[in-house]
Length: 544
Image (tube, rainbow, N blue to C red; front, side, top):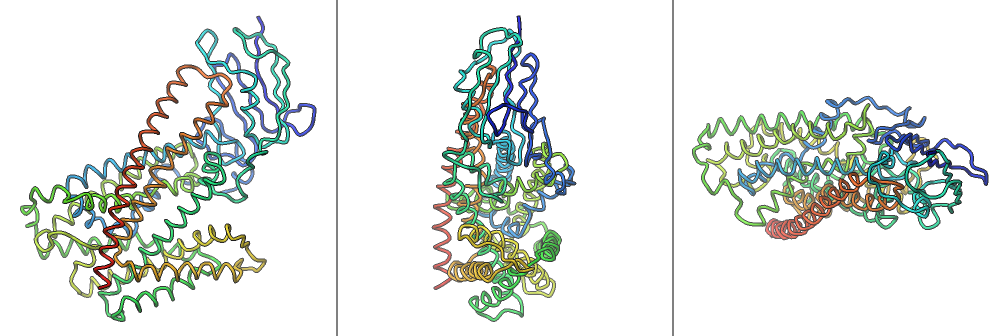
């Protein structure tokens, strides 16, 4: 008996020749090897090949370093709202819920990593090879038309499929079948040049409209965070001698600082100052805990009652969920973090370590601070700094947090501006600083818009609660399983031979994706509605 080993060659002419990209289905159908050319090297599969551009980029982060980066990414200014979230949700929901949200984020990141195995090979990933059963095992065969569909998503002018006679047990499409496949981008081309990895995954899963929707959501998310940051600055400054006495004028001088910083050609120096955020937050909570112990001692422990364990209403649960989701927003930056790793396939492992640190830290901050201040504040209604007295050390902590927020906000304005600039067709100029007047106008407009909104929608904790429910939950909890589900459905239609075991595993994963999508949609819709109503009510109260 001879055996047939299908090979696929990718060429530009009529005659088949070996291109830099080939798929070898392996000896005995027990193992597969995929060698990819182009912009790859960040996938999670066993096979990997780095392009010159990928190999030249800096990939030096180990698993512990990546875990630390993930923890630092999560623990930003939003941690100041954690005692508020605990007061809203109660001690039990805060502790158990933080654990559930941690697992939810790990699942989301894992799904995003698996998406890299399901997109075409000319992106920043290594797609999984078709899993073939060994001889004698049950397997699922597809027709030669499926072979044609397999490489419809390959970026090549022509695809030529050849099957060589080498003796196959069982039947597959006849030998020497040669089929020319039309260019795969007759209906949808590759993603726009410069599209980030998250955008590429969205493109191949949902098409151009999906990418547009993702851009809109990301712009909304970034603008929402900027608005929250400006509300935070106004709140921090309000308790210092530097306030003008009017939130409106405090907002004006805030945008006068953030606007020009957003237009500087090099953001590297701002990143260094922004890195002070963890230190500033650490110092702030030391001050907060010190005041709580000095003024109340441990009296709060004996004041813990049944009411402090549970939330008062669905609206309170929604506020808690929004703040926690905002504080765990790792999914939107998962690909960026992964691309800095020495071993990108260990991203899920690093995420588990990093989010475990975040979970422990959030439980300690939320529960302990809430208990310490129970004798003086039954329910915290704003960020933790607002409940502290006006002393010199508290003023220093507020000014330090103000400085960190002001130098961090431009780092959000820039990517938000770039998304809008790309949609508006504004390209970088030939100037040495790379900033044209159109780009400067876009960035300043973002700052001005966010400032106007922050004036009419005050309340740092309520803004991040709504943004967490509406945008962060959508990008972090719904999109990852949705993208994975859509890509898996497409990938299943393109496989040549798949074992029943693999089909069962994929089917179970798809069932789990459907459950998580439904749960995510329900949670997002319900909590977004209640947090929006709470935000409007708080804004109307503050503006009276």
